[in-house]
Structure formats: C-alpha cells, structure tokens
Length: 272
Length: 356
Image 1: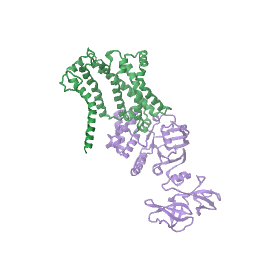
Image 2: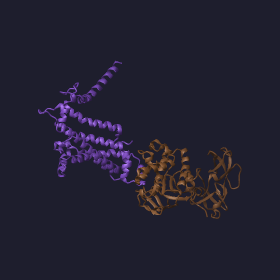
Image 3: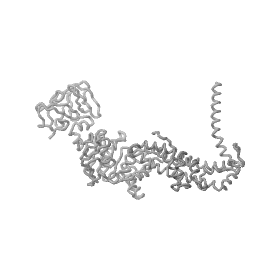
Image 4: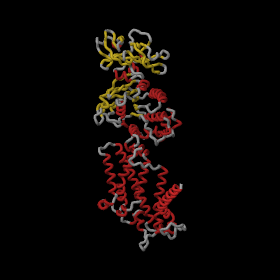
C-alpha cells in the first residue's frame, strides 16, 4: 500500500514538473508584457500599458505583423489553390510513376526551403529580379510547402467517391466546375488544414525572409523580433515579451477558429 | 425523347479485356429497356459507354439520330442515376435537383421553381431543405430520379437502380419506377443483375454474357422461349430443368423415361441425335399417379415458395424439379411423376434453341 502511494506521488510529481516545464514560459509570455520591469522570472504583473505603447511607437514592429500576414495569407492562397488542382489531377489521372513522383517531390521539398539550397535560391532570386520582393518570397515559400500539401490533400481527394464527379460530368459540368462545385466542398476540411499549416509555417519562418528581404520595411515579425535589443546589446525584455505576445495571438486565434469551424483531420498516408 | 442505336459497339479495356464485343442493338423511343446479366458480363460497361463515361474502342452509339460516339458525356443529352445515387452530400435536396440546371446556366429563381415542381411530383416537398445524409434510401433514390427528370434529357440511364434499397422497399420502388417511366415516356435503359427485376419492369430486355448479347426480347419471350441454355438457366426464379436427351422416333429419351417431342421442335429433329431438353418447373405438372410421357422418381426435396412448393424428384439419379400448388405437396420419399407441358417444353441443340 505504501509502495503504491509512493509510486503515485512520484508519478504525479513527475507530471507536474513536466507540465511546469511547458507552462512557465507561457505564463511568462502572458504576464511579462504587463509588467513595468520584466525579468526572466514569472511575477505578478502590475498591469502597465507602457510596453504596448513602446511597440506602437516602434517604427517597424506593427508593420512587420502586417508583413507577416501578407506573406502568410499570400502563400496560403497560392498553396491551397495549386495543391488542390494538382492533387485532384494526381488523384484522378493514372500516370506511370505517379507515386514515385510524389515521393520524390516530398523528399526534394525539404531541400528547397532548407539551408542547402540557400545560395542557388538567392542567385535565382537575383537573376529573376525577385530579390527584396515579397512576391518572390511568397513564390519560394510556396514552392517549399507545395509537395507536402499536395501529398496531404491527395489523400482527401482519393477518399471521395468517383460517382459524384461522374454524375456531374454526365450533367455537363466541365472539369473546373467539377472541382469547384463538387470536389472542393467535399475536401474543405482538408483545405482548411492545409491553409492553417501553411500560415503557421510561414508565420514562424525566419531564415527565408531574413536572407531574401533586405528592406526592413518589408520584414515580417519573425525577423523584426530578432532586432529588439537595447542599445547595450541586451535583449529588451519589455519590448520582446510584448511583441512576442502580439506575434503569437493571431496564430492561436486562427487555430481556435478553424478547429471550431472545420475540425482538424490529419491523417497523412492513412486510409480511413 | 429519342431512340438509341448501337452499331458494332466494341470496348476493349487496357490490358486486352474485351468487355463489349461488336454489339448491335436498337432501343425504340420511349422504351423501358433492361440490360441483364451476371457480374462481369459487360452490362455496366455498356451503360457507361452510352453515357460517355467510357470511350468506345469501335462501333458507334446513336441517340436520337445523332452519332454521339466521340462526344463528351455532358453533350449527349442523357441523364444517369448511379448505383449509389451520387447525391452531393454538401447540397440540400433543392440544390441537388437543380444542379443540372445550374450547369446549364438557368437563373437561380427558375432553378428553384423547377426543382420544387419536380420534387413535389415525386413527393419530396417536405424534404427540400434536407441534406442527402438525412434521407432514407428510398428518399435518396427519389431525389436522384428527380434530378434526372429536371434535366429533361432525351434518354435516362439507370445503373442498378434498386440494389441499394432493402428487399421490402425494392418491390415498391419497382412498381414506382415502372409507373414513372410510363408517365414520362422517356427512353430508359437500366442495368440489373436480378432477373426478376428485369422481367417485372422492362418492356424489352437484353441478356448479356461475356460481352455478347445472348437474347433480346420481351419478358414473356425471354421467359417462355429462352434462345439458348445460358438464358434458360439465368432467367426464372426457379432454374429451368435442363436434361440430356436423345431422339427415339417421335419421343425423346430423358433420364431413362420417354417424353413426347415438344411442339416447338416437331419435325426438326433427327433420329438418335443428342440434345438438351428444357422445361421450367412452372410448366411441369406433378402427380402421384403415373401418366403418359412423364418422368417418374422419388421426391428428394420439397421447398416452400409461399403459395406453391418446389418439388425435386430423383429420376434415375437426375434431378427434375416441378412446382406444385399448395395443399398438393408430397412428402419426401414419396413416389411421384413430373409431366412436362408439351407446348412449353423446349429442345436445345449445341446450346441453341431448336425451333422453326
């Protein structure tokens, strides 16, 4: 009996320590922006708005959030539209070596936005006049995310019955009408998943915009955060914590919204 | 409204499987036509080729005097009901019925008016706002029919229209479909593997086997005079007796007994010839007393069919079946005699019907 109780106590202590490990940084993020003089401790805040005023006065901070939004939404729209069309075609047309092609794309995609391809991508962007351009960055980010998106959405397409489309075909619907009227509504949860996944990916991406955008006015929040230091070169916890909070709120809200509206259905290569 | 004509229609799937082998078929305007056959006989391929969902390898499809062989499904002016009905799950009943009109760019108000009209005709007026998932199988079928009616196509194609319904509902739907087709007068082709369904609903039917049409005819013709042993064995809720026979003068020797040559084959047989003698259990009279030209044996099985019984006699180790009205059924082990009706019995030479 004592051994059992001791075991339980040990178990819950372990869980508590693990939870604290993840909770304390979040608590810090929630309290530090409202504290006049934040340190690395979690303290009871004194509810000052001074830190937020500093962010508003910062020349780039709020704009960088808008830039992040532009990049994330732009990439998401491109990825969702292109992956839906490509996945539909790959799901319905029998091509020799189709699966091999998909897996090869998936493998190579991790290189495109990875460090290995940085120099050639940079060269390519310069040659095409897409350096320091948000359009260029959106194209490159989309290219990196598309293969995985196609792979995920193809699974949704595969599981929708063909008779729906054949029925629409006999009524005279064109392939694009079939996609718009029948396929897209049926795979909407999948498309929502892809959109959220893309936005979260772009929102948190530091390296690509850092390398490809030189104009500070075009930089997204992830890059601007890196510049929030005091004159002495120390991390400015007042601004950093406040900006960090503002940076994370949109993503959390988006998750909650989409999860409530569509529900997430991640099931990678697994058939239902 | 239009007639459908197939000329030498051939479909070969990649890999060399010949699903349709040079079929010729004419379905007159307004006919309710059944394509019947076992699984894999090509009946669904034929229907899908008519719809344009499969492209013909050879031959042509003519609908209403227009050759549509190379034409896209949407431009053929046919409408199809799929086996699973293929109702769009994200649209309500109104939008489902109005979908063909939406493709034809009919205005929204007109679409909804038309959908409501067709829906009301099929008794769907209380269900117009529901999604397909909230409907029973029979209601879903009526929505699929309403959607097809809204197209005002020249011909309707039904793929196994009753197979997704439960047994009880199937009988109701059978009557309903036949009545609806008669009222609309639209040329309709349907596929089924159930011979009772085909016999009950069709004006005429084609029985298919391995990409070939084995017989075309009205249900009565097909039931009474199957053109070959395949059709004879396939049609009928109780299988036809198909027995080896030899010609002996003006009688046939069947299972060691003598039966008269059937009316249909009189004067067409040669002495000593080996044939197959066919008679339906329904056209075979059972009695406990020996009679002229009957097959005598011992009762081995009695199956209850409701208002009648199917009696199996062992005649010299050959099974012969007869349908016996209720009340007259023998007990297992009794001695009995089965007398085929001479005007209904048939003779097959090399699998084909012998007749003038």
